[in-house]
Image (cartoon, rainbow, N blue to C red; front, top):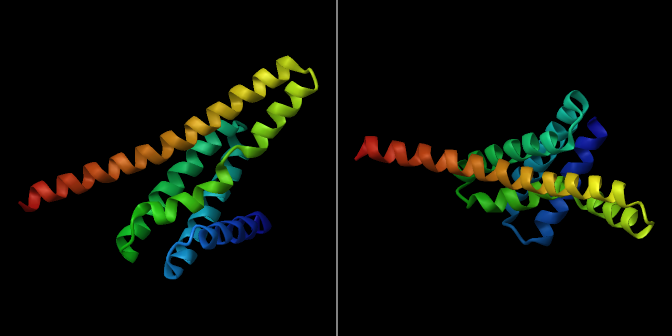
Amino acid sequence: MLLQFLSALTATAGFSILFNIPPRAIGAAAFSGALGWTGYLLIREIHGSPIMATFVGALIIGMMGEVFARTLKNPTTVFVIPAMLPLVPGGSAYRTMLALMQGRESEAIFLGLQTIGMAIALAVGLVMVASFARLLRRGFKKREG
């Protein structure tokens, strides 16, 4: 598990550099990606569903992105975009296309639906956290005003 954490940390840091995010935000983005990937692995082992695991990983990444955005004074996307890349279902999409090209249609359909489910889970998890954070900020502004 530690090796997976470190691999996700390194990969996310690399994507952060590639996406040209501010240097002082790279560590936070990398930590978010590694934590999200670790959450994915834990839920995948407990629950077995890659869709549920992707959703939980996205929730973790979204929460970390909101926290780091407030503490480091950067937009949330600076932390979320590179951090979510380990969760993007590229391997699943590849296996879907491979099964389709090899004539294994039923497996391709199963894998394709799983890939779509993982992509939707990633998007929904991130949107839920962003929406909840926006509601919290709006609630605090009304109390202050």
